[in-house]
Figure (spheres, rainbow, N blue to C red):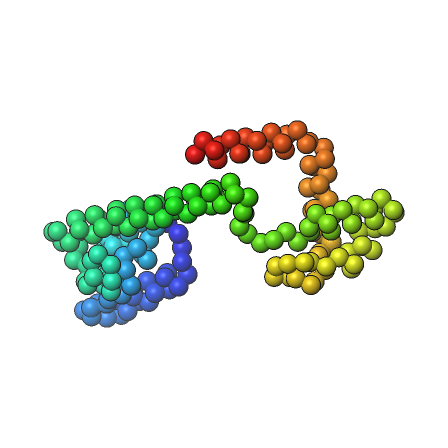
Length: 189
């Protein structure tokens, strides 16, 4: 079960109110069921926890709007819709992964642009071959895109790019084989 600080704070507030005023009805209101947990086991465990502490669960939207009744058919319906929410989440996850794989096959990869571009790396390698140090080269490099566009890359980024380049140069067959395996895997799916 994941821990969400604000949600835990809300639960703790409900528990404290119930402890100080046991005869009062304490209601924890959420937008919809799937905002409470990631899977059906987590959702039902949370609903049981709230019931055990005398806290009423209210959902504003979704398949079961209103107050959750843990008795009779309410519990069965809650478990059913919790399982449906988990299935919906899995379908969204699978669709997202399929779209990412399709984009990767087209050569499009998400994420931030690299700080050290190929041109920058070649500049660094050429200047290192001429005897300059990374510390001397770093102020002359400018990040071309992304959040830090126009700034200088850190020395650590330069050393990391050099290490990755050295790895590619040392094991070119392994990298080509890994790329071929990855392409074959994506074609098979």
